[in-house]
Image (cartoon, rainbow, N blue to C red; front, top):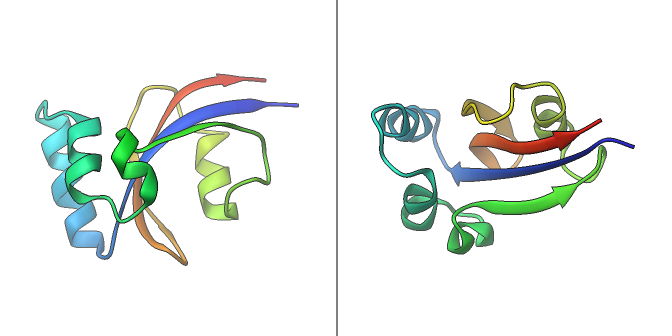
Length: 93
């Protein structure tokens, strides 16, 4: 079964999500931005969600995690929780 490790930043608006993505693309630290802005408890750990398999996260999240290139920030991804920036840090098929 595939496994992936990912980190994310969860915010309320698509606009905030896009602003944070621009900061990351300009070289700001993903983990620091997660600590400062993420509404998810994982923000305290720099957005780290650990390792998980398919079906353990909401479908919109799962779809990106198991298809996106590794180490490339994806988003905004909208779920029932808000808007996410997410980065797959490793994946095994």
